[in-house]
Length: 90
Image (cartoon, rainbow, N blue to C red; front, side, top):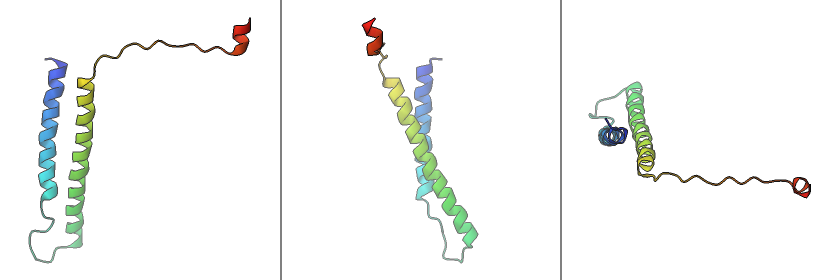
């Protein structure tokens, strides 16, 4: 299998994962008016935070990979050698 095609498939899978993480982040923390323990609220908020941070991390990596896939081959740059004045005077 071609590496470029594999990366494209991984990018598509990552975009689907981001959509799912957005769904998790949009859900209500509390579904009922019942008294909910502070511990449960804290865990729910942490889950949402984790979903949001994971989505951003995946999005950043997708962007980096897309840039690498679309990048043209780099040309070799000519290296310049700098000499001090004393070296040129001899």
